[in-house]
Length: 142
Image 1 (cartoon, rainbow, N blue to C red):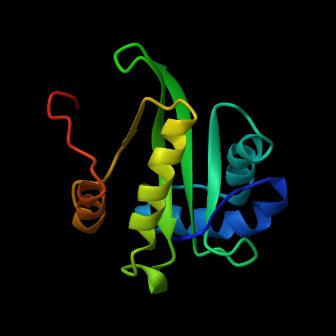
Image 2: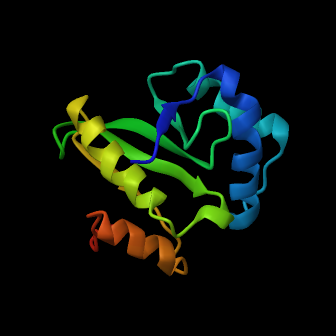
C-alpha cells in the first residue's frame, strides 16, 4: 500500500513544487504566491478540504487534494478530487490505484457519502485509472 500523509503547513515547501509541476502539465496559470494562498488553509486544517502527500513524507512522489461539500442527493458530505498528481518517472507503478483504493474507503468511514472528479477528455490514461478504481461517468451532467 502506498503511504498517504495528511499534509500540514510544515509540508508547504514539499507541496509547492509538485502543485506547480501539475499546473504546468495541465496549462494552469499560477504562481507561487497564488499557490501558497490556496494551499495554506488546507494545510492549516480548514474543514473544507484536505491535502495528502503520496509516498514518503520527506520525499513525496505526489499529492492529492480533496475538497468537501454537501449533497442532498447523496445524503451528506461529498468530496471532489480537486487535484491528483504523481511524478512522471514513477507513474505506471500502481501508486495511483493504491491511493484511490485506500483513500475512498477511509473517507467513507469518516462520513463521506460520495466522491467525484473531473478529468480531461484527452487524458485517457487517467480515465482508465479512474474507471479501474470504480468511478463512473455521469452522462446526464456536464
